[in-house]
Image 1 (cartoon, rainbow, N blue to C red):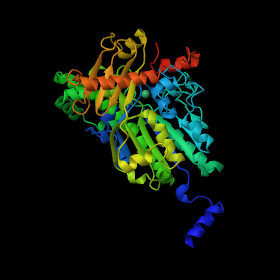
Image 2: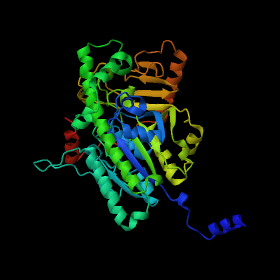
Image 3: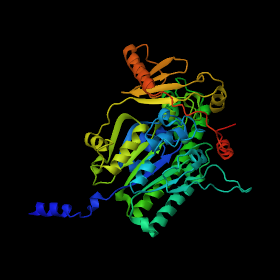
Image 4: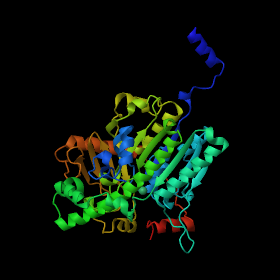
Length: 465
Ligand SMILES: [Zn+2]
């Protein structure tokens, strides 16, 4: 009788129960955030209390990799679910072509309200990445002479998103599901966090950590003189303070969701776009090589209980995960209860499929590479650099074709080339890379014409000379 009643109700087109209400999606991208500098990835300094807490109640991807070490290519991958060779954004000065559809376009077409609030003009509307967002906010602070700067602090990005939530709550669309993206740029150089965030971190403790294992933290076997280690630790403290500042703004957004009663209806995705060298392997910035300090990024997904997902709380996934897989995962959670993108399987098993993950540093001109690296071409060479991460190993192929093999589990600092000791493994990974290259020719979208405004934005951020 009860069953008949239930079936009857469904047959009459009864609205879906509360559990079937469409979920919101909050995407927070953390620019220039190196995974190993965060508490939930084992760092000793308290840089990320809010993200740590989110991870404890959600799913932590322990080995998420950016496809490239640059902002616009990786963000294009996060939003499109395509690798750089497919979406065609191989550099910050590229454009995302009309042929590429993003998650914002898909969700908007299916009834979600969409908003994007960015922290730097490297992702400006002119790039094409704003397609699919009903509301777009890239208002940068005014300079005295009245020209917009190219970046703004995370607090202003969070303000913009909260203002959008406020406006929605008062409008007729308040009952629709939403997708909101906040991009926090602060961990990018220069490191200028407010004093209070610096005070929370101790350079001496960081120096001790570095000195205890220079292979792990600096990517070199020799320990530099004490004053050098202290100077490096001071920069790490400044960088960590920026992360902590950003983390505080993440905490603000999460508290807002809670206060609005939306937390339990929202899938939260927090992800880095690439890391930062911070002198490891002799590099300070990003974009120039494919070591883990530049490519291994934080990724946490917290889904509400109710979908098959609540059970995932506290899950830590050890397998490598390429950000190209993020869109199907998030979209599947919203559109079909977590089946299509594989979310339900990973929550049920506590594992990801063991798939190889491919990384690339694109072909830079000699001049661009010298500018990025700040030094002569050695040891990078210009031309395309490639890597594959699989089952705890990373094979790195230099533009010259020279290959090195690292055991990431036992040599996380990527110091010892194991290709001589592991010839079969080396050959297997090299074959995977060759097959991938075969399947992914670089898309030829022709030369890109940049507007004067776009050139100025990139120049202000230091991307052009
Ligand atoms: Zn970036």
